[in-house]
Length: 376
Ligand code: APR
Ligand code: ZN
Ligand code: ZN
Image (cartoon, rainbow, N blue to C red; front, side, top):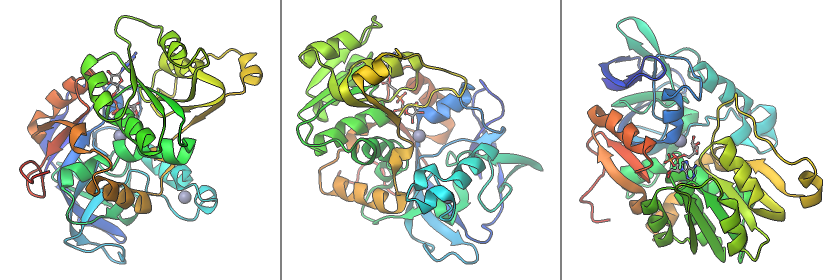
């Protein structure tokens, strides 16, 4: 089967013909319909996120179950599914306290590039190829743990569903689960990719009164306004995005600020634009080597809450179907998030466009299972 392989850091992805072992016990074979192109994949290509290579990237996928291994009870061939990149174990400390997003086992497996069942299922002429985030969905097919499979309603186009595998669940959950933004709140969003635009939409759904959207690409600001932002800050050619937010909030700062880029400077700016006793939520993923600098006196004297959100603090089995219901009810716009569709062979073009900030989301289509022309 065809898959996009990253052989080494900073290389282009190569389309190779790989072998895929059949699903083992508690594993599922999925034929992909669509896979979104997320900045976390780009972080890996750029060497910001170190994971074992060679690997098949892609972690925002949806498709149809083709076969299941022994002992699989949660899904069956023919099911439409979204892949979850946090296949939580259900028995570690964090799963036990109701925080499957922090699952120890899922995290360590992701760093190893293997599947929860141990080892890899991907091969290239006898050489092992690693799985990225247990999903590796820039491929025609994927074998994943049953924990990574979320069955969904069949009337959702699978390209729209794919986005809920990462960007939408990450952004929506940061607002609804992590920050618990309430009616009337003011919210600033730094970075308007697939994740940031999902934060904007979730803030609107929660009834936020003021949503300040910040990016350095003007088209992103226009799209944010369409999706619910009330104010925009154009970050082109300036490092100071704090002053404009203070100006828009009577000098106080916003109740909440979300950082959806993953850079120390914009994380510090998000903290600085949050009002006293407000909450700053870091959603963007910076390199494990990077540090931020905060004024020590401000920590007690401004009493802001600085926290983070990983995969939207979600419970994928419940949250992904619920988010898709919001889409089908017309309350959440997933159509507007898809800027461009690509064939697998065009994946390097998709990453180049993402790096330029051009895309809300680019999406790789595998054919079959819902795309354009379905009337939505
Ligand atoms: N100031 C303002 N906007 C910026 C800046 C900056 N200095 N740098 C980048 N941006 C904007 C880009 O123009 C783009 O619109 O941030 C946005 C980032 O969007 P994407 O590249 O599409 O990233 P996305 O996939 O949404 O992921 C955002 O969340 O999950 C993490 O790893 C992911 O760290 C990444 C973040
Ligand atoms: Zn666990
Ligand atoms: Zn992602």
